[in-house]
Image (tube, rainbow, N blue to C red; front, side, top):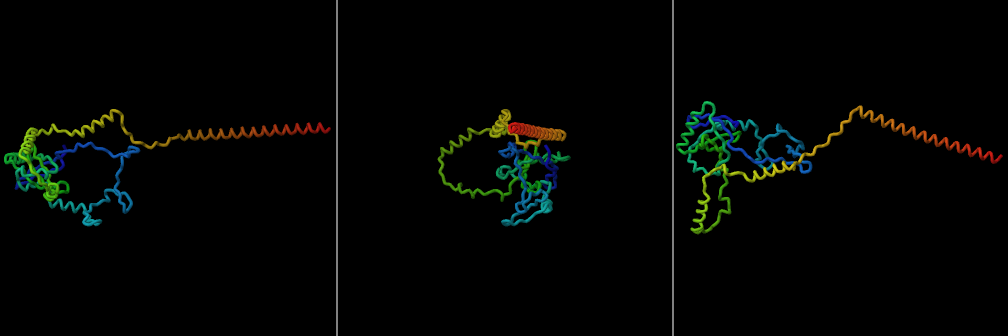
Length: 292
């Protein structure tokens, strides 16, 4: 795996040099959007309707809409100063808490923290100390330009950091009107439900859970490929390349044929004219003989 950045875990005066790696990856099947008519990929362009022109990334800035249609523009320097004022590429431990005290709703994305050069000993020290106390570290970290809360815990051979939502990012349950119900449960109903849960209980083995929908979709894709049910984008046919000498020769042949047709037509007209003159002369000669 390729590390995202190098930094350090800091608690007290102790620094643990670490490398950060993404611990998870999406396995979704990716699709391209195609034009139904020609099966070519659809393009999405950055377009300014006011200027009626396509814009490049160099022409784009980030703006915060503080009122409808009104923006404050922030530059890269603004983000850099904000990042420099925080912990930077360090993971600052704030507290140690019990894992059971953190609700799952707070967790976002997980990362592996591995020891950087020269940090194996202090890395192992932190890992064993956390393992013995059963504590989880609550820390502050900046990833890219966003400062996040994070939980650091031991997982097998590695230290895992999970970014967390801040409390004001968690929606309150009292906003769900559907939870304002009033029901009565019988003891035997609760007992049966508990028995059902116990009968379905098992040790957590993540490898036995698979994405059946994704696998079924991939099976359909493979079946279409095997059955040659493949859509090929329509491509415009290129114009026929004609050799210059061939074009000249064809033009000569055409011109010769036209001249030949004209000569033949001229001879036919002359022949008809000569035949007509001979008939007239013969008719005049016969007429003179009769009169004499």
